[in-house]
Image (cartoon, rainbow, N blue to C red; front, side, top):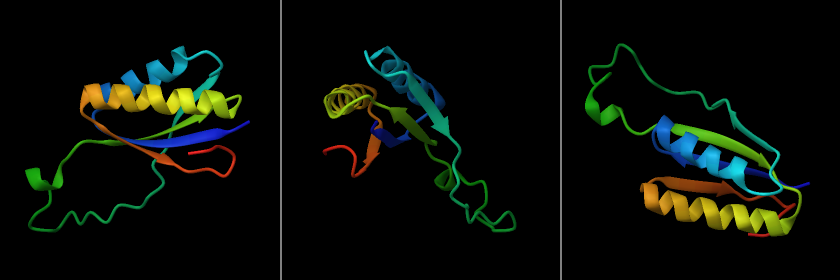
Length: 100
C-alpha cells in the first residue's frame, strides 16, 4: 500500500481544507498530519526575532495511505488543483512505491 507524504505551505485553514479533500477521495482511509521533526534554528536572543520577515505561512506535513497507484495519481491531481485554487504550495515526497 503506497504511503504518500506531502508538505503544505499555508495556513492551518488551508491544511485542513486539503486534509478534508483527501478524506473525501474514495479509497483513502487514513490521512494524518505528522509532527514537524525538523529542528528550527530560531534564536530568541536575536535582534531580528519576531520580526514580520521571520514569520510566514505554516508548514504542515500530511501522510496519506493510498490503496494503489491509480488512487495516488487521483490524489495528486486533486491536491494540485485545490492548492492552485487556494494559492498554496504543496510538495510531494517521492516514494519508490508510487509513480510520479
